Amino acid sequence: MTAVALSGGEARRFLGVDLEKKGIRPVWVEIENRSDQGAWYFPIGTDPAYFAPFEVAYMFHHWWTSDRNRRISEHLIGNGMPLEVPARRTAKGFVYTHDGQGTGYVRIEIVDDVKAHEYRFVSRVPGEKWDFQRVDFESLYPESKVRDLDFPSLLAELEKLPCCAADKKGNPVADPLNLVLVGKRREIAFPFVQRGWNLTEPFDVQSALRSVRAFLFGSSYRTSPVSPLHLFGRPQDAALQKPRNDIDRRNHLRMWLAPFTFEGRSVWVGQVSRDIGVRLTTHSWYLTTHKIDPDVDESRDYLLQDLVMTGYLSRVAFLPGVGEAPRSAPRHNLTGDPYFTDGKRLLLVMDSRSRSIDAIQLMIR
Image (cartoon, rainbow, N blue to C red):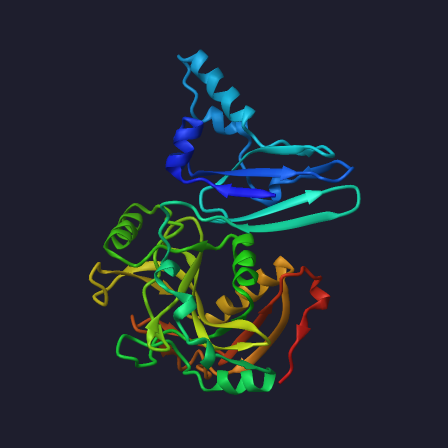
């Protein structure tokens, strides 16, 4: 099994058309069937709304160049990934996915006469820049000082956390830390990709200017940066977002790797909220900021629903820690947006094995 996501330049060189301009990411898939029974590859598992080869070719057709149109169609269709993987044969070709759909995380689903098989890959896309790449996770904490905790010890450590993320000076006056994720990196990454969450670009001058343009023209910016907040003395280690129709509306998540593990798995402390608009502000040099939905519990509970739907959520708990802020007396974040909350922090333990909803364990304190 091989899966490789191509960069925009690689796609132009091999396929001869600018797929990146059309928002399409070609993923090369190669499957060697060593069994004595045939199987089927389901591209819908790689991207639920993948593009058909002729659909992609038609985007580059011109009415006055019939010979060129034919060559483009033959080339893209001929290099498409077939659905059938015959016994003792190899099938290979391109799947035309949405640019950013998976962002290098590729899911392959094979169905034979017995059952469905799922394979998941991380494919580094050359030239892409993501916020998490600035962090050296391997050297973030000395291995000898990372303690592995049982459930009571984990609860004790989480209770020591501040209610909220901090500003640059370390004052915990920003958005509430309302989420804890437990799992190995791929166990955490793939469910988010499956549910349409995107990685974010680094927060720099270029991405900030692109954000301003998207705001002014009401356009989408699926990988727009998330402003830095602080925990453990540093800005977030990674950020994800689930965009809507334009840059004004999105769900976004900041995560920090904790200096301890739970049952051998990494612990990530998070802050999740829903952006419902963009407004002018003097709190940033580029004069714009997102306005959050004041009901931050809804954003937290939305994420719970999202991950339940993936089938990879194994355990759930609601813990104290954020501190209650009623609607009649809301708190405010760094940019002055009010928010209210029941004060609970959501703990989610992810697994690599899929399970039904009724198999999810509710962890009771």
